Amino acid sequence: MSSEMRAYVARRVLMLIPLLLGLSLVMFLLLHIAPGDPATASMPPSALSNPDFVEQTRKNLGLDKPLIVQYGYWLRNLVTGDLGTAYGFNRQPVLDLIGQRIWGTIQLQGAALAISLLIAVPVGIISATRQYSLWDHSVTVGSFIGLALPGFWLALLLQIWLGVKLGLFPIISTGQANADWSERWKYFVLPIVVLALPNIAYFARFMRSSMLETINQDYVTTARAKGLNNRSVLYSHALRNALLPMVTVVGLQLPQILGGAVIIEQIFAWPGVGLLAFDAIGKRDYPVILGITMVVGAAIMITAVIVDIVYVLLDPRVSVAGGSSNA
Amino acid sequence: MRSQDATLPASHVASLDTAAEAAATRSRSSVWQRLKRNKLAVAGLVVLVFFYSVAILAPVIAPYPYDQLTSGMRDKPPSMEHWMGTDRQGRDVFSRLIKGGQVSLAAGFVAVVIVMAIGITLGAAAGFFGGWVDQAVMRSTDVLLAIPLILLLITAASLFSPSLKTTIVVIGVSSWPGTARLVRGQFLALKGQEFVTAARAIGASPVRIMIRHLFPNSLAIIIVQATIWLSYAIILEASLSYLGLGVQIPTPSWGNMLQDGQRELLFGAWWLTLFPGLAIFLTVLAFNLMGDGLRDALDPRRRSR
Image (cartoon, rainbow over all chains, first blue to last red; front, side, top):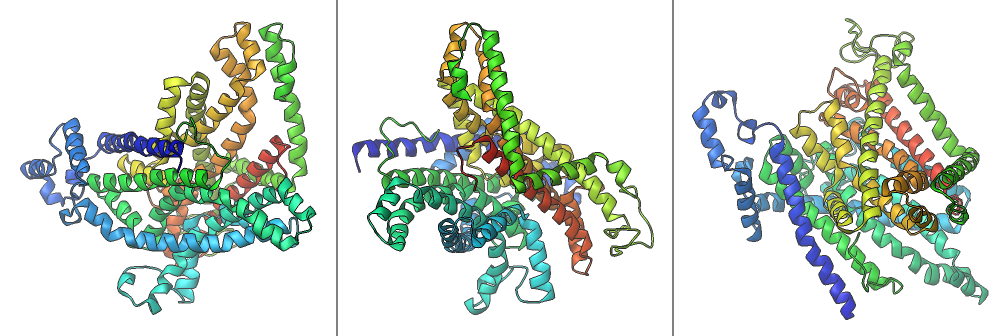
């Protein structure tokens, strides 16, 4: 790593601190300017009529303090690696709650992403090498359809036809974590199909155009002119360079992937961070919402930095000297 | 078209403005020619014109009032009287679908107007003025882009009481960063061109340069972006309404019709979810085809893919 590269990495990593602070401030303000009181959000009506009890609850949750003080406390805890305590969820630490759920999300999303790439990359390559063939046209039409299908609608249809009517796959994921893998994989099928379909469409289209662009480059023509056979030109010269932009595309898909988790996990009752977020939002559990946003935000920001760095390392044409941040 | 602008004699601001407009008109007509040759894009356009016409003419076309309850007509499958069947309350699904389309398409349209207004203004300011303005705008986009949009939308929509208005405002004010970045990039690239320097030299004000020179030359890219966002906004509205956080019943929208009908699906009433789902799918597909065609038509160097 050159010194320029080291400076670039350091600059990008340091920039994460103000960005994460900004993110926490935006979310903190959003949560606290919204109407409604989290102290009473999940209280039974009988408790609501007792003002002393409501006041005591507000005090216990720290909601009686001025906003700036609440934010100060929250920041002070954050520095020590503590995301605070949930209002509900048996008042567990937010970090523990996220820790219990994050594995579920990583398993599902990781599998979906891996399958998407395993399908999309070859499909895109074949399309590019046979441009305007029947296969290519079918892939183009297919990817338009894949991108336009609303995920929640597809989930609903699959749940009814494959789940209820044919009984092939379970439609609700409760309890899947304890099942044996010989049964457990069935829980993954429907959510993975719904998650992977738009990604396959998007990645395949991108892979196709990236490959087409590379095939038409001079050095590929040169390799052909030298008399190398088509196969070796495609796979040893063109493919490597065509795959490069995929790194960026996949990395930058992360916000969409994590966003999709919220809806899909809710539909399939998948025990992941997305479902936790959905529950927390419904109960106005501010510390949990804030904690999840921070973890997700940090993951997305760090991925963006890694993607940029990997790109610089892989592509010698990209220079970092004097380059500003990711603006 | 940009290079043509640059070679024009810059005698005074007015002639430069006219030239910019002429270039814009010229390219508009050839864009239309190229777009017409793209069959998929034309198909998308036809579908969209049809859907928007139906939505606008909803009260005339709908055979029944969308909220008319008919006892004894619960969950009836499609028939001659009710083309798309009836729902749990005995309401005509076809009439509701048309009214829901009006709500969904209008919501998407207004949300995109807000997205574009904020995105273009901030992106233009960032690209043109640079310096701390640029830093402030870009760092804000960094922060907003680090939260998955749907998570932000669900949070905001459920904190402020869910309604049609909340949905539109929430989508509008949280979705601008992408557009801002795009417009910024475009303004940044154009700012250094000769025709802008010429306009500046003869004393055109920054606002005039932005509105008369930079904006018309960025219009192509902005139109493509708006088309794409129209389809996103419709999906986002549908997702929120499906989760019960968007448009609230009894006002129908394609999203809440899906939510309303999903329980009946278990008992075989497929018409309640099939038609609204198809409507969303076809609208989004049409927008994507159109957006793709527009992008190719506006940038002739791009091979049609």
